[in-house]
Length: 91
Image (cartoon, rainbow, N blue to C red; front, top):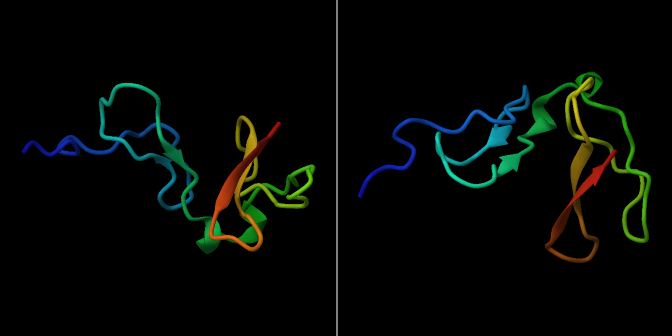
């Protein structure tokens, strides 16, 4: 079987957060599958301070992208009382 990652990982969406970017192989077809990476090792002063405006379930979550990023704000938020999480995105 041929290794789909023989030429590496797609570089789309890479950021300073460890593991950020598309996780598909270089040259993949279709849409990118982007992960925000692990921001837990970054100093809080390097992270965006935009706050999710809220809805019935979530309010006050902070953006986990780097300060000064382009595009929408986003974060992964746990759904209370479950093992599930939801990706929140806001302008």
